[in-house]
Amino acid sequence: PPKFQPYRTGFHFQPPRNWINGFAGPMVYKGIYHLFYQYNPKGSVWGNIVWAHATSKDLVNWELQPVALSAAEPNMDINGAWSGSATILPGGKPVILYTGVNSKNQQVQNVAVPKNTSDPYLIEWTKPPQNPIMSPTTQNQINSSSFRDPSTGWLGPDNIWRVVVGSKIGRRGVAILYKSKDFVNWVKDEKPLHSAHGDGMWECPAFYPVSVGNRNSVDTSKSSHDLNVKYVLKMSLDDIKHDYYTVGSYSYHTDVYTPNKGSIENGFSGLRYDYGKLYASKSFYDGEKNRRVLWGWVNESSSVDDDVKKGWSGVMAVPRRIWLDKSGKQLHINPVQEIAKLRVNPVNLRNHVLKPSSLLKVHNITAAQADVEIAFEGLDLSKAEVLDPSWISKPQVLCNQNDSSVGGSLGPFGLRVLASRGMEEYTSVFFRVFKKYTKSNQHMVLMCSDQSRLLLQIYVIFHSFSSFSDLKICFDAYVKKLQIDHSIVESFAAKGKSCITSRVYPKLAINKAAHLYAFNDGLQSVKISRLNAWSMKSVQITGKQ
Ligand code: FRU
Image 1: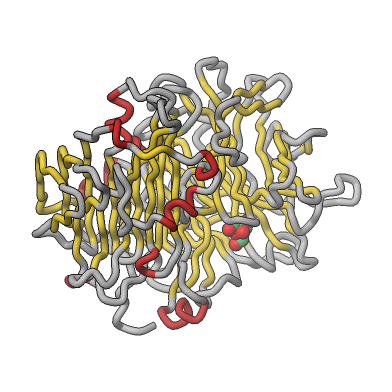
Image 2: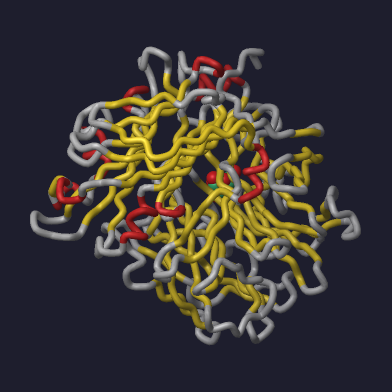
């Protein structure tokens, strides 16, 4: 790989070189966080997939460990050790379920256990001879090339473990349900936990409880009788490479999952963890801090040729915490608090009015590696433009047509990040505010991460509020947090109800030549009530792969 690497990140996890895709089997064990990832030891394109391994004490700095699961056994995984999940069994014993591709190129599920459970680093793993423990057969009629990514197990009050495995039947995405008493002998249930027509393959399905009314998490390894929970079903849609979820209710007696009405917004088949690039993500119960943590894979937007040239592909999003919104309909997803450890040299600004067509430079910050929080107020909502209902189903088009250099009324206002001095290139992350109808008091906030200045993708989300009388909600909407790290920009708005992750490859705005600005291109003034920005230190990634 070349020495000059302007797109490598400073505070995101990535191995020193080669391809990664998807983070499998996350867990915390004896106080150590374990990150496994789909890894090609031989190059920067997908192939030769094994489970690489890294550990951390703080979710910030990482130590690379030897490969945990290699592709080795003809009947188990000789053609690839693919994604899967970890479960902590009673007595605190971790176990991994993963997909192997066998010598016949069939996808099968295997179990792996630590060689030495007294080693908190869980360096060595054994694949018991009972493997594979789930296989496609003519009897069960499972498609052998669409049978993968077993979830973390959840234990019912009947002391029976359940997991789901991703699949498809024709165009129907399916989460096949399996049950077991001992985690080795598994029986496929007659009916899947859930399925949806038209989705195509469901990769990396996840199913987990979330607490209602607080941010605490729920231990999936303890048989739960807690009625005060809802359930999240997440699936990674292979066809469009996005992670979708629904929130709903679930009965252990019937193993029926029923998504909420209203957890489906804007005509999508569900909500998204992230409206930009985040795929094949995995979350886990973190008993150390009583929270659920999410690790997402963010792939490149560059060409395969570029990946080969730079010698690597893929980064991990900053670890995020997940909890259920008060409404019970949607998740909040925010960077974990530990990341704040990396902040240095704070820059603060209060009550600054951004007039129409104005730009405000944020000085004294390493703008290529920064953490920014910005809050706006003082919006004259009566001036909001009326939203054409046809825009709701295609926000990308709206964002595109009205890019951040084209004036609207209330907005676009926000931040220009990774901007070159002469504004030849930048990414803007901005808001626009609309009225739903001419006379309505209902407003919608659009957040965009606009890369049209870089001739790359544009990602968008609409926020919808049924009433604008709740001032607290709308202020939350205009608070944005951004994590900027050379070639990745992660934006969080409305307390993490809306996240957009983008990859950016600046040609000019590299390292010290990158700048940060707040801007307002709308016709109305807006006030920055506060802006807090920090330069971010780099994390340490030690050890050898
Ligand atoms: C997700 C995925 C999984 C599979 C693995 C293969 O990106 O396609 O479905 O197990 O990656 O590397």
